[in-house]
Each structure stands twice: as C-alpha cells, then as structure tokens.
Length: 283
Image 1 (cartoon, one colour):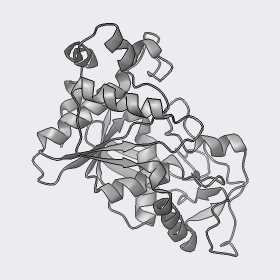
Image 2: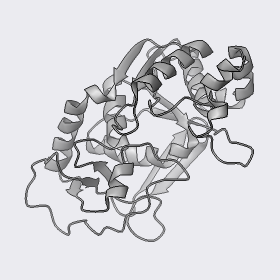
Image 3: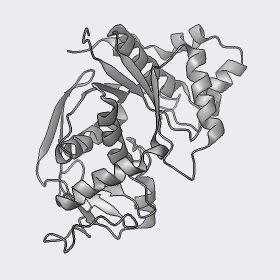
C-alpha cells in the first residue's frame, strides 16, 4: 500500500462507550492509513438525536488517543445537514427516490448503521410508485426510500473478504431492497450520510466491520446515482463475546473505558485485538 494520496477514516458514533470491537476496527484503519503514509479523518457520526451525547463524544476521542490512535482532521455529521439536503434534491430530481409511508420503527432505525443481526429487512415495495411521482421537489419533512434496480447484482472485491456480490430487488432471493434514505424529522439515513461524507472527505479506502458488507452494496448504488467515485473497501472480521454474539455497546465490561480503569495498558488491549491476519490485504 504505497498510494501517495491514501485517505482513510475512523467513524465512531457518540451513542455509547467504545468497546474492543470498535478498537479493533479503528486500530486496523489507523495502521493501514499510516502504513500508506496517508491522511486519516475522524468523523463524529452524531446524527442520532435520541442517543448521541456530548460525554460519549469526549470519551471516544480520549479512548482513541489513549490507545495510540491519532488523526489529521475531523468532521461532525450534525453540521452537514445542508450537504445531505443537496444530495437529496439531486436524487428526487433524477427519480432515484420516492416518498414512503411505512412504520415509524422502520424509519427510525435508518439513521443508525445496520448490522448482521439487525439489518434492514427486504422491503415489500408497498409504497413504491408504478410511475414517476407527480413532483420532483424535495420535501424535507417526508420519509423517502431509494429505489434499487430490480435484479441487479452489485459486485466488488473487498480488500479482506475477497469477491462479494449482492442482489438488489423487492422480490424473492434479493439480498436487499428499497432502503430508507431520508426521515421526515429532517435527518438522512446512515447510508446517505456515509456516501456524501466519504466523497467530501476524499476517502480512498473504507475500513469497517464485515457486518456492513451489504451496506457497501447499497452505498455503491447511491454513489452511482450521485455521480460519485467508489472507494476501495476493507471489511474486518468482527470480535465476539463468549456466546458468539457480535460485541456491542451493551458489553460495558469490554469498553475501552472499563479496561483503562481496571488497569489495562494500551499494549495489553492491542494484544487482545489479534489484528495480525486482518492487516494482510488481498490486493
């Protein structure tokens, strides 16, 4: 990895304390950026107004620095609503999205990054119009879904997990369907915000957990619709608890803050991450 202009990013959300799973992904992201002599961003994904807290935002910065991870620039998603609205205007104008009247629960979840155990279900197409909508004006107080191209395989070669392919559509056998892209409370979905911000930051490689492989397929469709370039992707293996479940912010005992307070050193935490195999790219 000797690209002169490698640009990577860390993308924590201030909705809880960072745990070992976060640390593993962020450590790999930082190491790949530094090995390439590149630039590393910290993106504060603070769009969830119900769960984002200032003390968690402060804690995540402190814990990352304690672990030995630093970055070159910062971005806060809550300060970028205007950019997301502009992207939506384009998508509405070009007919890539349509208004949705589905359940509040489905819409509420869209602001959070999906995971393998809570990914957005295949959409039935209940609100999908048979013809183009009567207006191409973006209405910020409306829920919108992105219309995926039925039957299209979205393929890419991941830097860690190899060749990937996902089928888009609302029918049987699809891996994902029309997905929520905007909420009527004026907030973009995780998918839209991620794509718009990665482009603005000039990200050349996205490093994140392999539970977001399907999200990459969704985001590649968005990148095409918005005429944005597609970065490379490197999806890390997940850390799991003793029962095999993905580590989540409910695992308080495995938070970096709890490990710090118990007397663990950064070197001891890094040794627990077992990052060696995931640092090897298939490129």
